[in-house]
Image 1 (cartoon, rainbow, N blue to C red):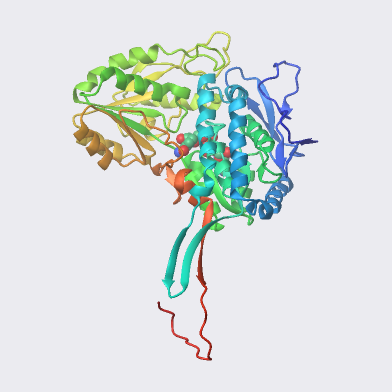
Image 2 (spheres, rainbow, N blue to C red):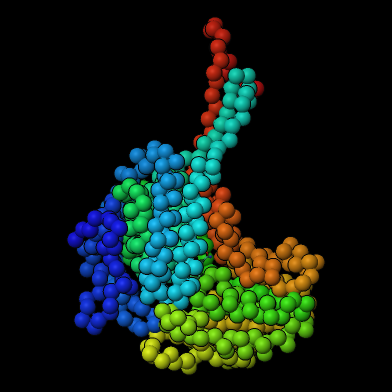
Length: 519
Ligand code: NAD
C-alpha cells in the first residue's frame, strides 16, 4: 500500500484512541517520496512504556525495499545537489516553521512511544528544531576559501561539495532531536539521506518526514527504512552510501564504526556515557543539588547527558541527605499526566537490567539511600516505572559504576580533594561530559583544563551544545573525526575540492618544462 506524502499524517500513533480491538498500524517506510507499507512478513511491536499497549508495528524492512530506498536517494542526488543552496535553505526555513506548528503532535508521539513527560518531549523537539534553524544558514556555513595569485596569474580556491547518499541510525532516547541532528544538516549541504529511526519509537521520524515533504523537500531526498541489525548492516555495507551518522550504545556504535569504515565510508559515532558531577563544598548547595537532581532523574535518566555519578568533595559529603529529600519529592507518572516529573523507562528489559545493576551495587557494599524499585503508579500498574534511586559509597570496581545504567539511578562517591576527584573521573573510560559545581574560579579553571571529557559544565549540568558549536563527546563516547552539527557537522557531510586556475595571456613558443612546477 502506498500513501502520497502530504501534510495529513498517513500514520498517526498517538492521536488515535487506543482500543483492544484496534489493529495497530504498520509504520510505513518512506521511499522516493511515497510512504509505503513494507512487504516484510516480520515486524516488531512499538510499545507504550507506560501502559504496554502496542502503539504500532514496525516492519523489518526487506533487502529489496532497502535497496529501493538507497536507489531513490541516489536518483534524487544529481538534481538536489544542483539545487541552489538558497533554495535548500528556504526549505529548512519552512520546515522550522512547520515543526513549531506541530510541536505538540510530535511531543505526544514521543511521549506515547518513548515515555518521557510531555514537557520533556517538547524540549526534545525544540533542541532538534535549533539544528534546523542552524541549517538555514548553510550558504555561509559551507563557504570555501580563496587565495588570489598563488603564482603569477594563478588563483587557488576550495569549495565544499556534498558527498552523495548519506545515512543515519538513531537511538530511542531522543526520537525527534537526534534525527534532526542528522538529516537537516546532511540535506541542506546537498546530500540525499536514508534514515533508520530507533525501532522502539519511529513515530516522530515519520511526522518529521511528512513535515519535510510539506516544506518542499523533493521526493527521494529523505528516505526512511525501519528495522534492526539487518538493515543497519545493509547500510554499513552498501556501496552507494558514502557516510553514516550513528547515535546509540557502544556495542552497536563500535560495530557500525568498524563495519562501515571498512567499506570506506565516513562514520561519526556518538555512544554511551557515564557523566560525573564534582561538587566542591564552596558551591551553592541548593543550586548544585537542584541541577544534579534534574540532570540525574530527568527523562528517567535516559539521556546521554544525564549526570549519573556525583563526586562530593570534602565538606560537601554531608549534602547527600538533602539530595535524597529532593529526589524523593519527584513525582513518577505516565508522561502524559500533567504532574509527572519522570516517566517510565523504555522497556521491561531495560527495567530488569536497571534493577539488576542496583542490586549488584547493594551486594557489593553500596548503601541504598533511596530505592525506587518497588514503585507502583496508580492507573499505570503495568508501566516500566522505576522511582528515583540513590546509591552511596560507590567505588570504581562496582558493576553499577562500570556500566552505563541509563535509568533514574544516581551514584554518589566521595573524594578528599579536587585533585583526587578529577583523577577519579579521568580514569573512567567514557568522555561524554563532566560538570563541576563551585564558586572558585581557580577550581573551575583547573577542572576545565584537566578533565578528560568532551563537554564541560561549570555550575550547570552537562549542556547539549547549541548547534553553532558541536556535540563533542570524547574517549569511548565517540568514534570518528568530525562531530555532530556545528562546523564539524558541515565538514562531515561535505568534501573539499581545491581548484587552481590560470587566466592570463600565455606565452607562445614550444618550450616544455617537465620539472615540478614551483611558483
Ligand atoms: P542501541 O545501540 O541499542 O540502538 C541504537 C541504534 O542501533 C538503533 O537504531 C538499533 O536498531 C541499532 N542497533 C542496536 N544494536 C545493533 C547491532 N548489534 N547491530 C546493528 N545495529 C544495532 O542504543 P539505544 O538503546 O537505542 O540508545 C541508548 C544509548 O545511546 C545509550 O548508550 C546512550 O548513552 C546512547 N546515546 C548517546 C548519545 C550521544 O550523543 N553520545 C545520545 C543519545 C544516546
